[in-house]
View 1 (cartoon, rainbow, N blue to C red):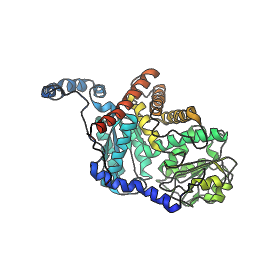
View 2: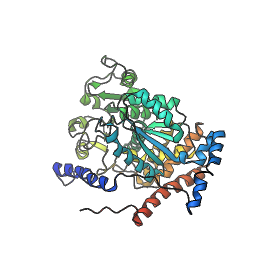
View 3: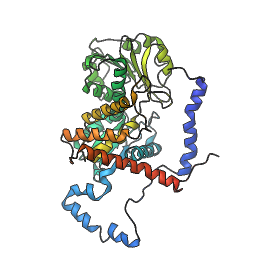
Length: 449
């Protein structure tokens, strides 16, 4: 990877442009989503079907057969995006009102990429018990719940409780979504460098919600926990650390189950001789030094995914000896981004009316996502599909649905062909819908002043 022919200042200005455009276009459109009808309205008499008196018949059928709610309403395709605004896109605790633009953006991605209808719900509470109770009260309206931008460590507790107690699938995209896409990138990176997941030594820099779940999912996919080294803001997690207490039970667990060498020190010591580094820590550059990468094993894999600036510039990582480098940015090769994961994972989950989203369903999505890139032609600068490769999403959805059926958590059992047709049709419909609305001027064109 060669250094772009631009200065650091020019790169920073480029990174600022989306925010500049966003401040103009958000007030122009006054939000990004709206509710539109999906049924025919031939004339006003049709409201006797869609509302009173005709609507009483499906209401009573649902009363007598609750599962019919998925058949007679949009519930089977509707996801609630729920946040308390305590950890919004690296902005931190900005509250539920300020979180709404992000949740609307998430709903837009759900629809355009996965054909999933999603609705933002920003809760004015920081109490995890109140949050859990509210989500459970909302479940009759939705086919699934996507938790978003909730502070660590309460996000772990909220997810664990809701997965156990809710009657519909609940997941936390900042945990499971990031983990699935990162695992997909790692699977292909290891193919490029010809190393096996069970053999590699992996260093995780940062112990936020994402890296905790990434670590657990990679281990579940076959990696050896003793070959992991996890680093928090105070150094390497090991059995000598006596400064970690509840509610950080994940850190306490890693102190006991990872770092078979019982290595001590900071990031530099954690990277020495390692095959892989996965960093989701603080924005760089210079959080990771070139010499630390040079001290890694041959054919090193480096994922530096802090935004807006990675922990080290990717070309510097390459100059230091890294064979494969990934970041969280779309303007560099190998972007690791949740948007190629969550729309398809929920698509597959909803299409078989799954009761939960298991780790194995996420791993199935990761392997199919990796296979999509491999089918197109894997190389050092192409580990993962991008959002514009829309054909990836039906394939990923099918893999998720098949695993749900295999694990016995699906309410519906369909053939692979049926699953693919359903997913492809719904995703294509969503994209065509936007194209038609823009073509007809119903979505007004934005003209730069």
